[in-house]
Image (tube, one colour):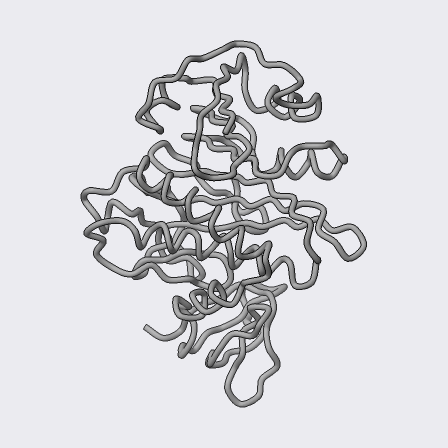
Length: 305
């Protein structure tokens, strides 16, 4: 795996390893398009190469990003630049980061802010739900690996991670298709490890928390590597159309099944309807009792305490 960074010492801390850094790299390592991406995300990047047991192409790591790495990757796909499958972008902290529907998310040091670029050669059928499932269950899987965790991580449909009543993370997906095939997928993963970002609690997100609230021994390095391992493993399952295991995990960890909820769409003051969730469909649509039509989008307020 190639590593590009503007803070070699911070990157070495993340891997608990000293590297031999170079200030130049050639077009045999990355092409001109990828060089543009690195130059946009990093000033005066240092470069090294690391052997891993995983198939990630590269990591772009910065101490502080003044742009959303998720948005940068999306923009590069939109203008048709050629960048390789398996790029990881991580910022220790950042500005202009956001969640779903561009809602502001505070990117504070001590947490994970990871964006992932993928370009599998697979069918685009139900692709958004497949990669959302992959992203969410990878985070769940990495949290489960933490020793001494008090509390169980759950999924608030469709893309938020909770422990108890606190949001500790969220996942974004953007999918790009061409005819019936995938062109690219960009995942954005925010996970609060040691720091709680400031949010204005509301009926959709009562409060934020972090993993350290539930495990004194948690550290960002361990969570980061567990997440990379889980993402890569689950990416192979998706590429080979073996999504059933991940879908089952998503259902098992759903915070909504059995709950009465209010669904808001255009108007966040008036719910579109209220009902009890009894399951999830193959495309992650919410299924309600009394044969109410499945719901595929909207913001959720959980009514049961």
